Image: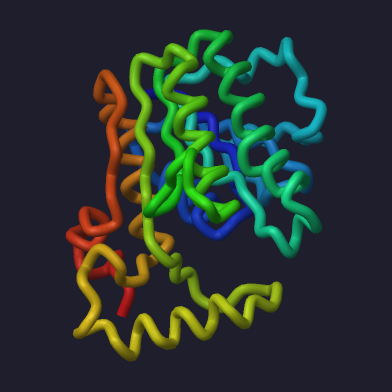
Length: 220
């Protein structure tokens, strides 16, 4: 693989994926469109974009693979409609543009339990996005489905997440691997490897498979 298009490079998983891709010898360029600028790097192209009004004719939509770690929370979005517009709408709009430009592979950071018929908003939106991406005609699609993400301290306050992580760590010996917290580094590495492999068809990487990655990438 030569060029990787990365959506969501400023988030926890996206930041880890950006660093991993820039350090990987098989990746010669990373295109990471963002709202705010990233630190400069010789291999990085960083277009400034508004994800609600993406440029349709930009040459950088053409890549060897695309990865999306783009997303928000209901609290940050402010409403269910705004949450879906970002987590589903923005990702799908970018995926359509990169597919139309000839990009053959798309890797999506989804969630354990994603289901288009789920009663909960988060898992339903993630499931609908998976369904949308599967129908765009990519040669290779991979959905990475982690459980609770553990990326260390966040700049924004998420008390529910902090409590969940504390419980997940405290009760780890009693929790099946599928439900244990996952380090963001492990998710990023799985996404990068899926982009590099670009296996034909639709692939799923479930949370228990992420737990089997090397110990350095696992939650404590």
